[in-house]
Amino acid sequence: MTEAPPATLSPQVKYALLALLVGGIAAILDSTMVTLAIHTLVVKLHSSTGAIQWVTTGFLLAMAVAIPITGWAERRWGGKRVWMAALLLFVLASVLCAVAWNDASLIGFRVLQGFGAGLIFPLMQTLAVRAAGGRASSSLMAAVSLPIALGPILGPVFGGLILNWLSWRWLFLVNVPVIAVGLLLAWKHLPADRPAAGAGRGRLDWLGLGLLAPALAGILLGLSQLSADGGIGHARVLVPLLAGTALLAAFIAWALRPGDREPIVDIRLLRLRSLGTASAVLFTAGAAMYAAMFLLPLYYQQLRGDSVLDAGLLLIPQGVGALAARFLVGKLVDRLGARTVTIGAFLLTTAATVPFALAGPGTSLWWLGAVLLIRGLGIGAVLIPPMSVAYQDIEPGGIPHATMNTRIVQQVGASFGTAIVAVVLQSLVEHGATDAFRGAFWWAIGISAVAVIPAVALPAKQPRVDALS
Image 1 (tube, helix red, strand yellow):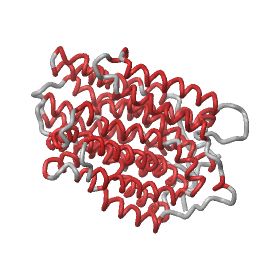
Image 2: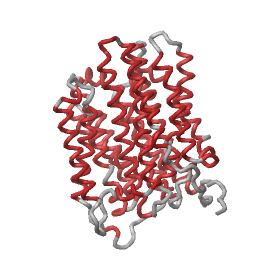
Image 3: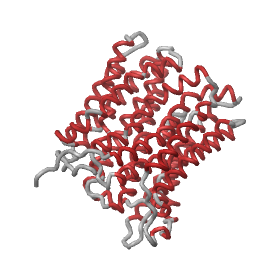
Image 4: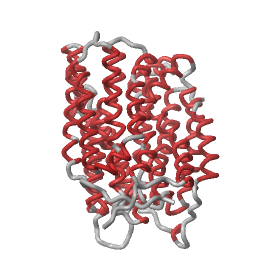
C-alpha cells in the first residue's frame, strides 16, 4: 500500500489545539507549582508538614477519581460543554484555594481543584484527537503532549518565582486570567459536538465507577505513603494498596464480563496491540519521567543548598530541551517509526541521568545544565510515539476510552516511579545526603533503562495518515 504524505494540521485543528493547550496549561502547571510551597504553607497556615502534605495528595487522589468519568460525561453532554465546565470548576476551586483560611479549607478546595484537573487532562487529549478527525498523527501528539511534558519542568520555575516575590495565594490566582483566555478560545474554536439523539441518555456505569475510582485512589495513596517511616509494612501503606488492588481486580472482572453494556472505562480495548503496547510504554514512561523529576529539585535544594527560586531556574535547560524535542520528534517518528524513536528517547534519558548519580555538592552547574538540556530532549520525545500509536486501531466511539486508559496508566506509573526513588532516598539518608541522592538517581536510571523493554513491542513503522484538512 502506498503511504500518504506526512500529516499536517489544518488551521481549524491548530485553533482547537490552541484553545485546549491554553485552557489546560494552568491545571498542568498548578499540579507541580504547589509542591514547592509545602514549607511556606506550613508556616503561613500554622500547620504541620504531615497535614499540609494532603494539599498535594488530595489533589492527586481527586484527579484519579475524576479520570474515569470523562468518557461518560463527554458522551452525555458533549466534549465542548464538559471541557468548559471543567475549566470553570478548576478556576472556581483556584479562587477558593487562594482565599483559604486554614489547612483544612485549603485541602478541601484542592480536592475540588484536583477533580477539575482530572477532567481536564484526559479531555484535552480526547478533544484534540476528535478535532483532527480521530487521526492521532505524531505532530498532533507532539502538540497536545507539550504541556504534559513541560508542566513538571516549568512548574518549579514559575512556583519559585511566585514564592520568591509574591504571596503563596498567587500560586492559585495566576490561574484566573489563563483560564479566562482558555474559556474564550474554547468558546470560539472548539467544534460543537452535541451528543447524537439518544446518546445523551446513556447510563453511567455506577458499579464500575464505584470499583475503579476508589481502586485508583487507594493505589495512589498507598504509593504516596511508601517513603514514610515503616515503609511497605506500615498499615497506611498496606491497607490502601491491598484494598485498591482488590477493587481494581474486581473492576477488571466486571469490565470484562460479556454483554453489550459499556463499562466506565473499556479495558477490553487493551487487547488491541496498538493501545495495549502504547499503554505499557506510557506506564514506564510516567515512572521514568517523574522519578528523576522528583529528585532533581531536591538535589539542588537539599544537597547543594540552593533556594527554591534558584532550583527552579537551574531546571530551565531541561525545559528548553523538552521544548526543542517537540520540533523534531514528529518528523523522526514519520521517518524511523515509533519503536526506534521511543527506544532512542529512553536511552538518551537514561544516559543523561547518569551524571547526577555521580554528582556531588560541588559538581559544576554548567556541566549539569548541559546534561539537563540533553535529558530534556529525551523526556520531551518519549511520550509522543506511544501516544500516536495508541489510537491507530481505535474506532471514533472508543477514543475517550483509549484516552482514559492511557491517562490512568501514565498517572499510576508516575506515582510508582516517584514512590520507588522516594523510598530509596529515605532509606539511604543515614549514609549521608550525597550517597542517598546517588543511590536514588541510580534507581531512576534503572527505571529508565527497564522502560526500553515494553518499547520494543511498539510497531517498527506506523502507517502515515492523510493530511488533515
